[in-house]
Image (cartoon, rainbow, N blue to C red; front, side):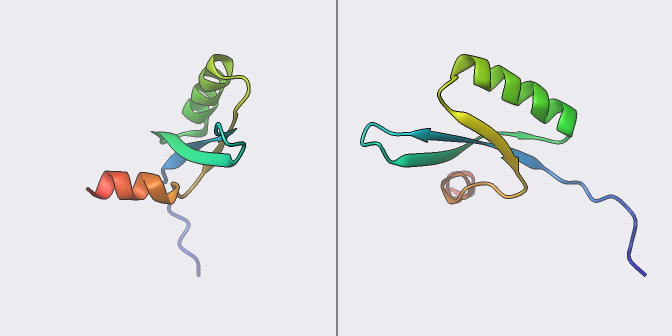
Length: 70
């Protein structure tokens, strides 16, 4: 049987935008614990930078992992 207990998940909010050379740039901008918190943060970030796309992932981008490990 599968274990039905909830695990503590962390949602990472990622930003997809274009850099000055026109290439796609993806960066992790925040961590949150709940969907409600994620929606609030995405709305806040979207209003600050309407040209970027924000979404949630269960795994941060590699640059974020390297930054937090140092």
